[in-house]
Length: 440
Image 1 (tube, rainbow, N blue to C red):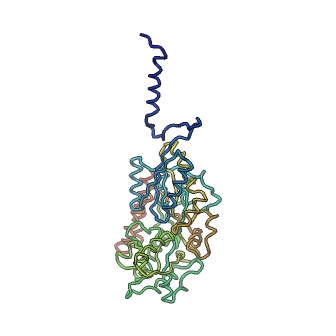
Image 2 (spheres, rainbow, N blue to C red):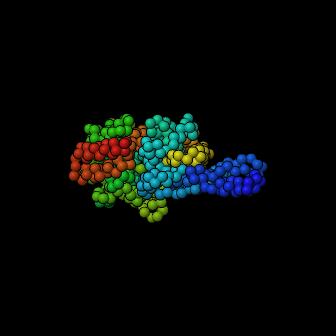
Image 3 (cartoon, rainbow, N blue to C red):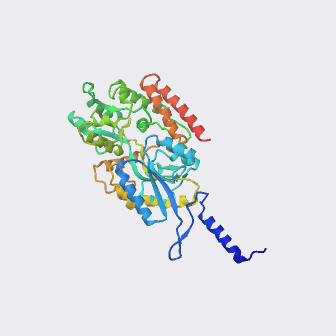
């Protein structure tokens, strides 16, 4: 019996409704809806945003999320707080299982190596570059493209227990007005506050793990060394200049100016807070941890200062720029990546970056905001270090793995199991093998 079109109509409608209720199979976030006026509403989108665990910015992150969702009712932001502990492993697992978040906020040390594999989306078109120092932008670029929107940039220097130097009448040995100083002046200052009987030392060397490895690069740069070739495809740290720099570090151990044994090799902000060392590698981002240690009774509160790294000739300093920023993972989901770009731009608006800048651990990357920092403040001193920034190698293929290869060689040199030359030769060989494998 032949069916009429009227008889078939319910079947057609049923099929249409069923199709409309189905999931978006390809990962797209729903379908376009119509509002009460009959106009097409924006498509619903759900984004995952991993954020770092710094306590002093969590409230700001929550406010940014709420405001963006309020302005864009079709967008839901799932904010996930992620600890720095083993973050590289978590990112690697997420990449290998195709479970990356859409947007991530965190240390610029984590992601840039993935830009080499087209796993990050460039953000050049989102940044008002005139309001940023070139050094801050270059530190988050790979092959001329910017992959992280930097919203807090710190520069490592030496954190100083100013009270320890005051007690020894040795404040004048420290550099003034963030000016450069020589490695011999640095050694003289370290000697002034070293008192083994009281278990206090001038400096703390880190070589227990990857933490603080930027210190060694910066110190070796002070002797004229380079860590990487200009194209980032070769390690160069075993040059005569690099060897001389490492020999200087070893001399600090030989002369008893650093914490002895395992304590002197493992990063421990509590030891600094306890007044055990006069100087240590650090940045303004470490200050909240020291303050927390004070509050927890780790030691008597003292004045913390920030000074530049020394160099052999005392004509300049060296630093590593790092900090925090926002990036977009290339999930290949066009709709989500479109909204991720809008969200990243919103996160880093001047208004929201001004909110972040109120946190103790943040030094804003916007020049228009940084100009408000008072002279003599740790924030102002941090911005004065930017001019000395060197290439730590964030965009080097396999960069995180090269860090793992570095500190065992430092330990071998410190314990005299290898000469400085042998240690750096072995490191460079391993690093270049890692780069070659990661470049395939």
